[in-house]
View (tube, helix red, strand yellow):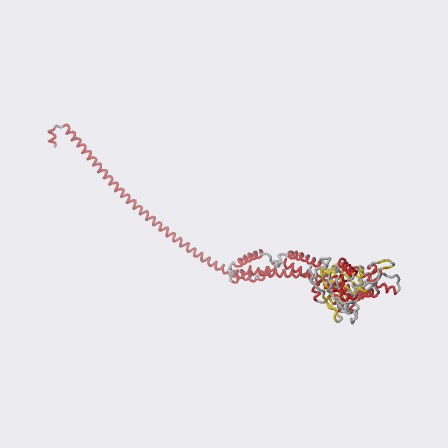
Length: 586
C-alpha cells in the first residue's frame, strides 16, 4: 500500500464458516496494494483472554477489533488491520487478531490447529496470549504447531534428510512473544527476583534424563526452543476492577490500574521497536502481494485436506513469485524490443545487439523479482523463453524484410513491368535496353535503406520470377532483328540503286551544266569580242574624228596664222607707204 493507509477499522481476512476457511477478497485487495515490507503481528490464545484489546492498542486505538465481555467468542477466523508503522515509516504494520482457541461452540477443534498454524506461518511476531501463568497445557498447545509441522513435512517431502540444515526453516518462523494475562505469581526463583524473560526460559528448561516421562516433558520444550529461538515474555496484571472489565475498551488510561497501563505501554514499545519485517528463507522481505500469496497458499492447502507445510508453501511461493518474475521479465523484454526494434533490421547483428541489451535488462528484472531460484530453473525457463522470442523475432524480421522488399520491388520495377506490357521493349535491340533498365532499377533498389536480411534473396527470387519476361523480350528481339536485317539489306540495295541513279543523274546534270557553262562562256566571249570590236570601231571613229578635228584645228590655226601674217604684212606696209597710197589700197 502506498505511504498513506486508509483502513479505519479491521476487516475479516480469513473467514471460518461451516468448518471451511475462506480468504476474503476485500482483504486481498488491500494487501495487493501494499508495496512496503510488512511487519505482521498475530496473536493467538484462548478465547475471552483479552487478545483483541492488545491488538487495538498496537493499532493506537481503543476500539477496532471486537472486545467481548461475555463467555461467547467474538472474533471468528482471522481479522486484519493494516496501519502505518509508528516507528518505521517505510514499513506497514499488519495486525492479525485470531479466533479464540478452545471455543466450546466449535464442532471440531481442528479449526484451532488451523488458525494457530496460519497465525504462525503468516506472522513475523507471534504473540501467544495465555492466562495467569505458563503451564504445561499452554506449552503443549504451542507444541502442537511443531508436531503439525513435522507431520506435514513427512506427508509432503518424498525424502527426509535427517541431517537437514534448519536455518532456512527457522528463519521462516516468527519471533515469539508470550503474554501472561492477569498474572498473580511472584517473579522469584531460588529466592531471587527474576524477569519475565527468565521466567519463560525457566519454564522451557529441559530436564536431565532419558526415561519416557522426561522425554515426554522435554519434547514440547525442545520443539519450542528449536522453532522459536527468539523469545520474549510480558506479564500483565488485571487492568481494572472486575466490575469495570465489561467496559474495558471504553475506559481511559486514568481509569485503569497504572501497573497495567505501564505494562501495555512496554509491550507496545517492544513490538514497535523490535518486531522485524516478515521474511522468507534467504532473507527475502515480504510485502503485501507476497503475504497475499502466502495466505492463499496456506488456506488452499488446508481446504484441500493437507495443512500447509512451510517447505511446500515456500515451494508454492517460489512457483508463484518466480513465475510472476518470469512474466515481468518477458513483458519488459517485449516492451523494450517493441520500442527499440524497427523491423526489418539492416543486419542480423543489429537485431542481436538489441536482443542482448533487452535480454540483459529482462534478466535484471527477473533477478530483482525472483525468489529462491536456487537451481536457476526459472531463470533457465526465462532464458528458454527469451531464446524462443529471439527465434520468433528473427523469423518476423525475415518476414518483415521479405514483405518490405517485395513492396519495394513492386514500386521500383512496376513502371518497367508496365512498359513491358505496353510492348516498348518488343523491338530490335529491345533486350539490351531491357537489361540496361533492369540494371538501373537494381542499382536503385540497392540504394534503398533498411531492406533487411532478405534483400538479396527477395531480389533474386523476383528476377527469377521475371526471367520468362526477359526471355520473351529476347526472343522478340532476335526475331525482329533478323527481319530488320533483311529489311535493312533490301533497303541498303534500294538505297544503293537510288544513289547510283542519283550519281548518274548528277553526272548528267554536271555535263549539262558544263555544256551550258561552255556555251555561256562562248556567248560571253562572242559578246566580249563584239563589244571589243564595237569599242574598237568606236575608238577608230573617235580617233578619225579626233584627227579631223585636229586637222581642222591645224588648218584653222594655219589660216589664223596666215591671216595674222597677212595682217601683219598689211600693217607693215601701211606703216611704210605714202598716204595717197593708203586710199588707193583701200
